[in-house]
Amino acid sequence: MDRTPPSSADRSGAIHRFRSELRTWRTRQGLTQRALAERVRFSRETVAAVESGRRYGSHEFAVRCDEVLGTGGCLAALWPQVAAEQLAADGRRGPRFAVAGLDQIPAPPVARRDARDPEAVVAAIDELRELIGQVLGGQPEADLPPHPSGERSGRP
Image 1 (tube, rainbow, N blue to C red):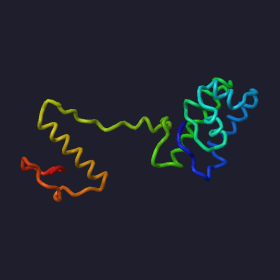
Image 2 (cartoon, helix red, strand yellow):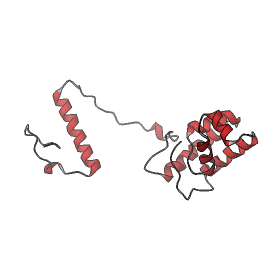
Image 3 (cartoon, helix red, strand yellow):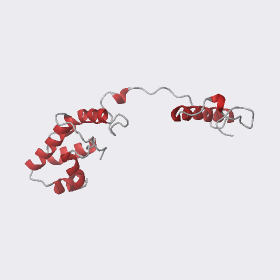
Image 4 (tube, one colour):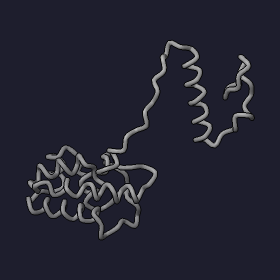
């Protein structure tokens, strides 16, 4: 299962509709939460938490429920909207399933270095130190102690 939704879960969006559809289809088929959980190979607690809004589902959960409940893909069709709402609710982490369109953004090309070339390894380490320093809000390059070889580095 994916993340816990905020306590003020939106009652009108795709997440609410997903929860409602899941419960409707489950009860229409005459299944308990436990019976559905066994068939989709998730825990009963997971089914209950998704239906009640205590947790988000996952794309895999939606697909398995569609198959077991015979929804014709109703839940999986809602999933891109659910994932977008989940992403908006928790900007720090995205859903485990890529939202339509976001997975099509090409990654910048990465220059490959020969790991057998000591200068390439040192350059890569220096780049990593710089990135780590930026992420951690670390010291500027000038404040770093000199490297034993005479070069500046992040290590004494």
